[in-house]
Length: 430
Ligand code: PLP
Image 1 (cartoon, helix red, strand yellow):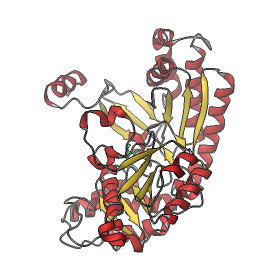
Image 2 (spheres, helix red, strand yellow):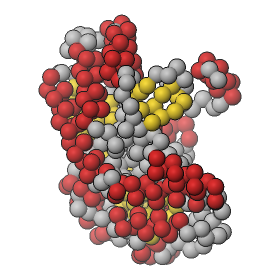
Image 3 (cartoon, helix red, strand yellow):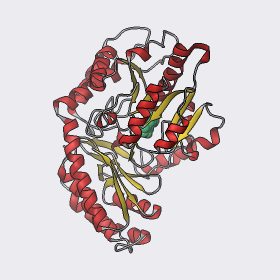
Image 4 (cartoon, helix red, strand yellow):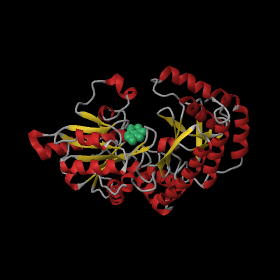
């Protein structure tokens, strides 16, 4: 199976939904992934925040193999025991009371929106409040409810009409939030750190006001922790940095270490509005995914990875801020833990940087045109951060405004390839 033949087959057989790098990935180990040509990449995107333990973690592989031999799927018509064990762990770290399991982020978000509407009907009956507030630039997924609370036109545009009743509030604008919040609102949707928007944390003031207004108007606060949750920001959940507690929390990406699994966590009070038949899924919360998720949470605890994310994140952020001081093309460094971004002044430079990083054997991506996003595995060490910083330093130095520009980067491809080989040759995965 060659890259060329796969590209040709996909172009004829798949819906055109992704703009893929022309690379055929074959295997991964630790923080590295390898392509069909044997090239090695340091993965600072980790499957868009999914591979928090990197590739091939031995304990995950063991649980996967063991569970695959006994029970992979049962349907939700029967008990298998892993859902309650996983729910016990998730409720403990989140402060919530109950869980619903599904297969993905967007499904978790759909369940959260349905919970909010159903809770409003339970509380208010025929006078149900059904407006939903969401924040500008937020991203909650691709299904219809999730799209309706997602801001960017490029995601929503072709699919109108979407779910009615959603009103957008300006990012971190407390006055706008107050003016739009009234008794007709059943929920306010927040990403404590906006991910796809380019890693923008909400302000403490905005979070406090959102919590207070939701409580005052009998609405629910829904925290989308699909990208920011489960340790990514140096706490189990990003809302825990703010000292507030939402009514509903959604998680997915790293939960089952690469298997599809999402969850909605909520309070006892809210959970009362769901009864058998109101919501469900065929695959969600199967024994294989849940067994692996339990092991994922055990590993976070055993290897003290949330504290590790905090310390490595602080080191990485300091280094990125050093680059910001050195290069005027860097506008800002943002984020928390290992959910970080640097904002460049130009989309072309950001695009050229991602391409040049790839030539250096480092995977990152770009969101909102100008933000370089870093979502590395939690298991990275200083040496990996130093490698990324050295590559960025060399690339930025090649831009004319700080030593080079986009085309100049392209002509640097050969030297970048040499650099990549010299810096990563012989390093093993961790
Ligand atoms: N919410 C947030 C904050 C996300 O970052 C994403 C995915 O990137 C989603 C929801 C949707 O998750 P999924 O792609 O698993 O449906």
